[in-house]
Amino acid sequence: MKGLILSGGKGTRLRPLTHTNAKQLVPIANKPVLFYGLEAIREAGITDVGIIVGDTRKDIEQAVSDGSRWGIKVTYIDQPEPLGIAHAVAIAEPFIGTDPFVVYLGDNLLRDGIGDLVQEFLRRRPNGQIMLARVDNPEQFGVAELEGEKVVRLEEKPKKPKSDLALVGVYMFDSSIFEAVKCIKPSWRNELEITDAIQHMIEQDFHVESHIIDGWWKDTGKLEDMLEANRMVLDTVEERIEGSVDEGSTVEFKVVVEEGAEVRASTIRGPAIIGAGAILENSYIGPFTSIDRGVRITNSEVEHSIILEGSVIEDIPVRIADSLIGRDVVVAQSPHKPKAYRFMLGDASRVGIL
Image (cartoon, rainbow, N blue to C red; front, side, top):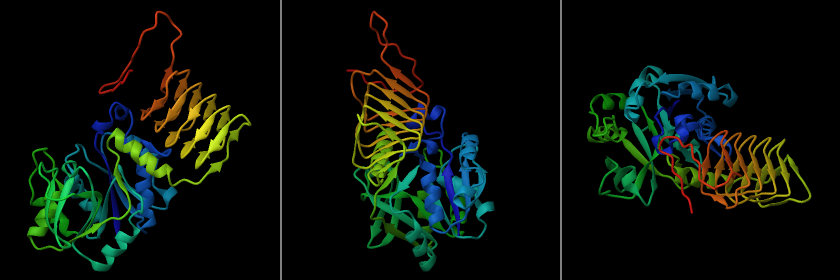
């Protein structure tokens, strides 16, 4: 069985961060989202993996290389324009050949991985298998309508959903999916929708099964979802103190302090992770916060946030919360008077001021 990870797309919902970073490389608990997918595929016993790439190919290729660190072989497949999941499947046909395969969206997280799902697919040998999860906002996803366990209809982002069962970003197919993709037309979004291709398979009496997952699943395409995924992953960490924590500091509950990090006169309340080489001084780090490598935080408070590599936060008089701060950002109180807000913000930035 082969794997196909989708890592194209422009990540518009995470701008301005994704103007300079691939959305699949934004870290959750200090590890790129994409790496969780690679680990899940390898743990399922799949070692031949294609990665669909677009404008951010250079970044993805630099981060993943040939895949040997995971014990897999990676083939990069160019998708010049993000024309839909079904389009990505179609252009991967030369790589897939006649093998069964799993499609994994590179910005998705599944708590329990896909090992059991892959084994179920290989044992039962349907033409397709879709993963479903119950959600509160099905209109934002592809939605499945079931009769018993049988899939009778799929619809992409319906205005009036027939169920609360959303398609999780993992699909399994045999080669019959390629013929189905050839029979569909672009949607109103000008994309070849995977829901339309699977619906065609259903209407042509191919065997499509569903599996409702038990563990949590997150599509990390938006800020709120990134923070929620970060919270979920951090809640699973085991305490590990490898860096330096002085006597004037307090570290409580599920905190990871990586090698080379320094914590001085500060309080960390976990779950939280402090990356290698980070420096915290006279600061408070609250629950569900990821501090990446080389970050420096002084005289400030941060909680429920993701702070990326090399950033500096100093002398901020109010707590920073529910935030995603990119690489090499400086957030500091200005000493100049008269006091004024001075901004240099990228496209599609959001700033909340009280």
